[in-house]
Image (tube, rainbow, N blue to C red; front, side, top):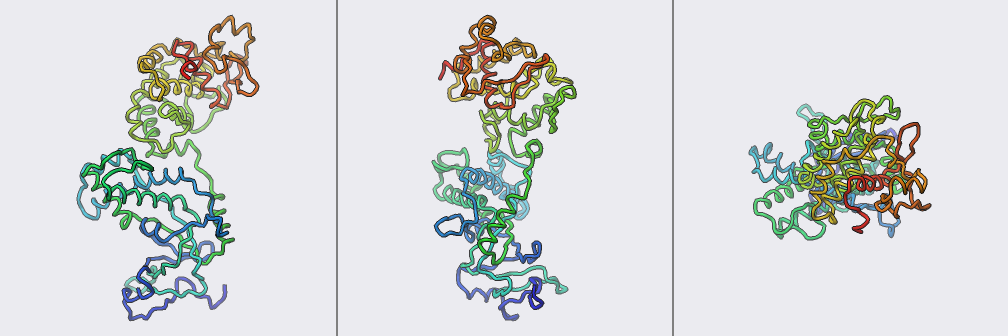
Length: 483
């Protein structure tokens, strides 16, 4: 860097020292002053600012339009953005509560908490900082209006800079957060203006006309988006398209994702996670672990946390993950799923030391099979009218299923045709393709060897078949007859 380069901490602005900051809005009525802190990110000049969600949406743009040849972003994932929008909406309602408590010094009405609980209350909500580039600013030739912020003893603690409206904030990292914020603000404006919830692209489960007491919550949330609720932005200055692309790559590829077990343990905003913690761990005392035990002789009867999340996601939602779950659905269904786990806990050998050597029910794929049956009987759109009676029959008679390793039912696809006909005469009617082994279908559900039945790793292929076997054994309806 040249000797005459002026460091950001000593920046000078085109401003007469005697002018008031309000006098500087001569550049245009749409120009706006923002507070920034200057620094160097690995030696590169950067500014950091807290801006309202509304300003973030208004001033920023995304370079993912191939027509202008300036692609510095991946393709927008609408579903991901919508999930983020739901998260932001939740955060804005929480923000409105905090604003009333700490800034207005009064407690909000209970409807704020009711709505927040409906959305899925979290112990804390925040968004990670956005990274953007202002292409029009050359850090070596700063020519902006502004003023320094100083402490009483004269130390510079930041700057208040006027941004021309023509200076776009090009998003490097955060396009989905930006799109999500835009969706939330649009949704809140629609709801507060029309006094009804949109029929399409709704962010909540609320429908129809908005109750008057709910309007106050949504108005407060919208006001927070414009003022109180901010997001931090790190501005890089004067980057070329090539530099933007490199920065995008580095920010998105040099990090490491949190493993599923740790995410499950930490995420108290997920209703299924709360069910696992509050009901299964604390109430039923089912033991969990974040360490996979491959040596079954060292098994302590604990279930891997990421497996527990998948099992319950199937039971509650018929999904293999529990992202963006509706708290209302979990509340409505949790008593049924608790009954399932109470029955599972009473399977001989389950939860004991060396459980995997004692019962196949200690293997997650069997639990996924039981979860699948539960969902199909109780919550599916095609659930039988007497589904609850059938479910209760399964719960009461679950131990009529032989969950031992030497039950030949688990070895069905290893047996000869003659053995299958003699020992499991009509089981084939319950299985996919009438129990036929087809080359294009995965029927390798596992291997019985050395007195142990180990199921395969491709759970999504296997657990529906195991569920069919359990249905057959307990005399439950054949799912293939309902198709």
